[in-house]
Image (tube, helix red, strand yellow):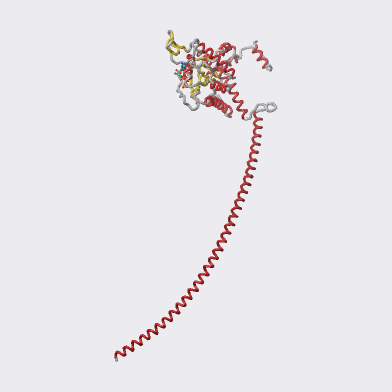
Length: 439
Ligand code: GTP
Ligand code: MG
């Protein structure tokens, strides 16, 4: 019995160990699990974070021995975007649903936050959609496409100098959300001694800035040795190429230069094989598990705490989800009531204010009306006076007119009687003169 068996027994001290007297069959459970998982297929999601043109797509093609869709990014993106592509791969009847997420335009912005924030948001969005699926009444996690990022390959420029501040700030923002494996890209462009110093410098900068990168696990005895050795080789210096060059009588992936050939899979030339071994062959399952048990768990906890859910009350007594829900409901109802009262009071106050305003306006209108009425009366009195004067004038005029007419009439009658007399006289004169002439 080894130490882990004793520990297990200490944990399960309530369970009594019994020995079996014959074959039962539950020793096939691991095989059942393998069969089930193989039928179901696997899912793995890689996020490649690195500057434009640093060699992200070439490395993915080299790692998976295929040619994925490739879009060249420009250096003039106003904001970093993330492009995700999902592929179905098959190797010896094991199906892998692989999603590769690439940053587009990373590091091309003046403002560092504009570079890392979209990456952080993307990772959170994948956690959020998983959480939403989990919280559904009718969950379908079995056939849910899990898009949570299992590993982030962080591509460091082979400057040989030190990490850029953007690298540090981005890795710091991401380290609690994703398993980060830093890689030195295009490692064929840096000399061996410079590379050695660069690796040491990078690791010391990461440590001094408190950036937690993914450590290959050493708790499983079967891989503890290789993993602890590989932890010492981080960050991996990688070279990518899909070109094949003939070396001896074999075609190998390599990059050919005027002065020689860099073989991608030659461990003396670069750490590509180490990365492939660690990422795909040895620790793929641990990366998936860490994503679920560490990073997603942290996201879920923070999110539920933000919503007010907690495992214990302020006195550290355990509270169930149901109790928290009831407390929250009560708090919510009280808050609702309080807001309703507040709104009602505000409403009454506003009505009073409005009433006072209206009364004031009414008073002003009344005053204006009274003033206009007064003016109108004054105008009317003036007009009445003028009318009276005018009527007096008209009466006087009429009197004068009738007097004048009377006078005129008298004058006319006297002049007409004189005319008659004059006519008579003239007639008499005429008759006399005719008498005379006949004589
Ligand atoms: P974007 O997606 O446009 O941001 O670029 P990327 O990061 O995917 O880079 P990509 O793989 O398209 O490579 C850009 C250029 O770098 C190509 O010309 C590659 O041949 C070259 N390249 C890729 N990997 C390496 C490498 O390991 N060493 C050297 N020297 N060149 C490389
Ligand atoms: Mg690319």
